[in-house]
Image 1 (cartoon, one colour):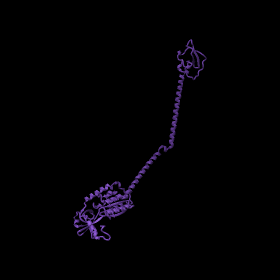
Image 2 (spheres, rainbow, N blue to C red):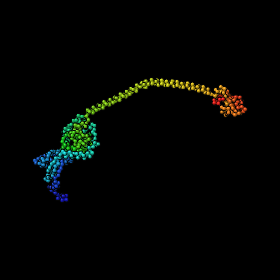
Image 3 (tube, rainbow, N blue to C red):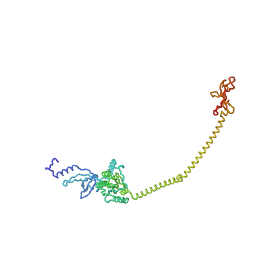
Image 4 (cartoon, rainbow, N blue to C red):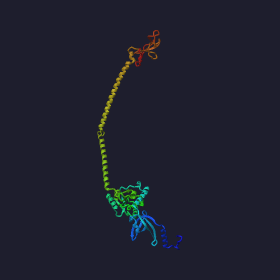
Length: 427
């Protein structure tokens, strides 16, 4: 077409619009899924807007009243439907719209099946993992609250939080919590509160409702937005039995908005009671420790070494004196016994001494070599011998004619009194 048109030869608007209408008409009928909004009826025609469930995209739909009333149950504003439509382009107005040929409401079973498939996909990506969930601050300075306009959920969170901790502060974002605009408004408020550095925790609260009413909180885009938040998020959607996907991806799940207030804000009364209990416990522990230390100190002070140090010295001095006296007695007894032993030994030595034997009239005959003569055959005639007496020595020579008596050679020599002689040589 660009080759056939020039600034000098442009096409009329009607021609271009007719060509667009022809191209759109070639599409035929298609089945589309969306959420009904802005539902109105005038005469025999029903007008509505079909909104995409994920993206912020919508299209106008005209439907004959008979087609609309044939759908069972009859769809209402906010219902999820599958529509067989024929795209139309109105040349006169230059507008595009769908003409509905058949409407089928999406059943609860089909919605649950879709949610289960989406849950499995997100779980496989790790969005529901416990490792990525963050702990809530003990006492948040400012709480971001996303809730419906003038809703009971807002009152429950605010009143219970301020009852538990009166000084708590809130930044409230009132949004649509059901219908076609809920996902967009909740997502936008979530981004706004997450970007606020004063907000320490974000609470998304809504009261109970049907499965269709809670579908925005299972929307994939909202779930991914919550998983990307840097601020901890608390999900308080519906009642205990309600479980949208937002509960699985949030850092903390609260069964109700009231439960969310209990989880986010500590109770000042409970904390004061806990502080009092801890203080009493610390006082008891410290008192017990001091009592044990005082008892130990008293026990140490009562010991004799500290109670009367001089008495202990005196006792030790008495022990030293007793030991010294005992040592003196033991040493004296040992010396007396040694003296007695020496006397006895001297008497025995005197009794066994050869000098004593000589004093009794005996003599000792020795060869010049000093050997004692014990037998007569040991002496040959002419041998020189020495006879030892008690007062000296007498040298003699054996008689050659008679070996029984030696002959003295010279006067007797006095013998030293201290030289011992072998008693076995006595003759």
